[in-house]
Each structure stands twice: as C-alpha cells, then as structure tokens.
Length: 425
Ligand code: GLU
Image: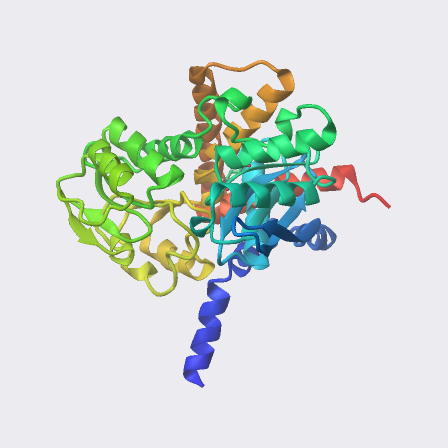
C-alpha cells in the first residue's frame, strides 16, 4: 500500500501539467487573481489531436498520433515548438503550451502560447518518412496555423529541415510562399541569423547577470551542463568562450567530468565524431544523475523535464540553477531549493532566448528585410537582461522566489489583456 501511494505521488510530481498548474495556482493566489479570469486562464484555448497515416519506406502504413495545444491567444498569435519523441503525452504538451504563454509574457513579446508533438521515434525513421509525417501533420493543421494564428518552431528532435517542410507544405496550400508561418527555418529560407544559437545565448545573458548579482567571478565560476544538444551544447560553448570553467557536460547516455575544466571545443569535436561522450579520454565518466549533484557555482539542466525532483533536490550543490530545458525541476523540488538558498533562473525566463529570436524572425519575415547577426544578438541581449531584472526586482519587492515572480509577472500581463479585450459572446 505504502509503495502504491509512493508511486502515485511520483506520477503526480512528474506530471509536467501538475507542476505547471501548482505554480500557476500559487501565483494566481498571490496576485489575488479575479476568480473569473482564473477560470479562463487555467485552461487551454484549444487542443487538437491528429492521427497521421504515413507510408513507411517498406510500403506499410503506420498511423502516428500528434497533438497541437493552443493555450492562449490574448497577446497575439500562439507560439511554440513541435517535438518528436516516443514518450510524448497530451498532458506534457498541455504544460509546455502553457509555459509558452507565460514565457512570451515574461519577455513581453506579442505572442500567446502553443506546443505540438508527434509520438514517434525519429531515430528509427528515415528522412523520407519524417518528411511525409511532418507534411501530413502540417496539412491536418492547415486551418489552425499561420503567421497570424499559430507559429510553430523547433523543439526536441525537430530542426531547421523540419521547419522548411512545414513552411513548404503550408505555402503549397496557400498557393504562395508564406515564410512567417514557422520560425527556426534555415537562414537561406528566410530564417533569422542567430536563431540557432539564441536559446544558448539567452542562457549566457541570464547567467552573466546572476553571477554579477551574487558577486561571483567568471573565471572561478564552475559550470555543469546537462545535455549537449542545440540548447546545452551551444550554452556550454558560449559560456566557455566567455571564460567560465565548464567542469561537466553530458549527453543522453551519460556525462563527463574534469575538475580542472573541460576543453569544450575538443569535447564537441569528439561528440560530433563519435556521436557519444562515452569514452572521452580527457575526463572521468559520471552518470546523468551524479552530474546534477556535482559541486559547482552554476548548474544548467538543458536536457528534459523532471531532472530535479523531491528525491534529489536536497543533494543539489550549485549556487545558481539556470533552467535551459522546459520543466527540469518539479514543483515539489522548488521548496527544497528555496530552503537551500539556490538562486533559480526559471525556465520561462532562462530559456526564452529561443522564442525571443523567433519573434525577430517573424518580424523580419513580415518586413521582408533581414538583420545583421550583431543586431539580432544585441536586441536579444537587451530583452534577456531587461526581463531578468524585471523578474528579480519583482521577486524582491513581493518577497517571493524568482519562479513565482516570473509566473506572477506573466499571469498579470495576460490577465490584464484578457480583461481589457473582454469575453466575446
Ligand atoms: N521550442 C522553444 C521553446 O520551448 C522555442 C519556441 C519558439 O521559438 O516558438 O521555447
């Protein structure tokens, strides 16, 4: 019986939708949110489930399940990535869609929130199969997406090529080229300079601000990064180039640790060649679990959800937690981290560099005029630093932690617009 209760508690703690809602409820209560507005904001606007038949290369038909949850449109078109993974659930996509609404509001860009996903194992599919699946998913969503409606972007296991297929499929239906229907496109296909690096660059900006605020020094600040994909890998490289001491990095299989500091370009070269960090010669192996508990100044989880939970939060030894992934910390772990005095830069602020640059891409596509990379990076830095200061000041003046401050700021902005726009009847 005890074990069953324990299992249920873990399932609930690790349900991203429960994690999101518990922070939302907490923030809404502290804001004294009007009960009617609470009813509106606690649910998504629309949830679409699609069954996607795809001809596989061997001639069989496989039917995949896909979702697009459009959480909120109050501040503008819905915005958010599409992920491909075997373990996707509707609850996860729901949470991620809501996080996009709060994230766009934290950095004050004119978008609502959405998220999409297809349950599949992209590592077992050919490029041609992925293309057919992506195109059919897009065709099924044709009435729901668009530059003024909902603008998808890359997320886990999707990339610039996936976005190019979505853009092309949408354009074929529209009978003309519509570039602003997705962001994260290849630069030559009306993508934005700096977009690929933007999430990592945003993480660098907020880490720099936090390090300054806590009076730490860059060369002495030891950084541990979990994940070496587009977010973790780019963040690790940019932090290394800025002079941080990167002591540990991991991929899906496990991590590597070197107390004297890793040579990140060398590590990245090894990873590109071997497709795995395992057996990297100039470091010791650590598991993804052990890596989170290493002694460091900055811990940057950039892999997936539920990495820091009530089971290991007590063993976390960083001063600053920079959330590169969406939802790496459960709500139950928040309290423990707060008690330990960890300075948390919550996901909806820390990793907002990606969607902020997506906003720049959408603007450039609509203008048909493209900016230099320095201009993109400068504008990104301005927004990330201003948003960091907004959240930290809000936390200090309201005596709440940074995560709840970010939620309060975001919910307040969305609630205000919802009230002023009124409810259409
Ligand atoms: N998938 C990214 C995120 O979770 C980017 C979304 C976007 O650019 O729309 O923030």
